[in-house]
Length: 107
Image 1 (cartoon, rainbow, N blue to C red):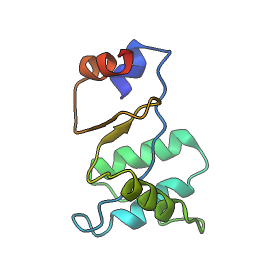
Image 2 (tube, helix red, strand yellow):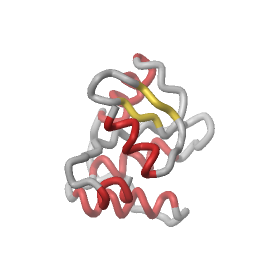
Image 3 (cartoon, helix red, strand yellow):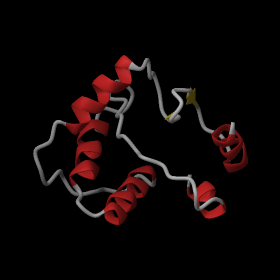
Image 4 (spheres, rainbow, N blue to C red):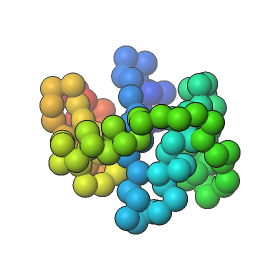
């Protein structure tokens, strides 16, 4: 996503934390911590730290956002991450490179 945004300033991503708790038992708490962070830059840094297997602070708020995201993902049939949902309703799961993603967005 970072590469896409560097190439195309007209593309924006909205991230929804969708922890795969059955595979990653601590992902729920980590997702909640990220959602509670008020600064987008700090939240992205926390997400990057999670991917780098670094510790992040515990959640600093009470929120139902993660539960709501899980319900939404289940409603949409999301079974894994990453899953992209386009503004026209298309759903694409799985990792891809920046050029492939840009082609999908442009369709």
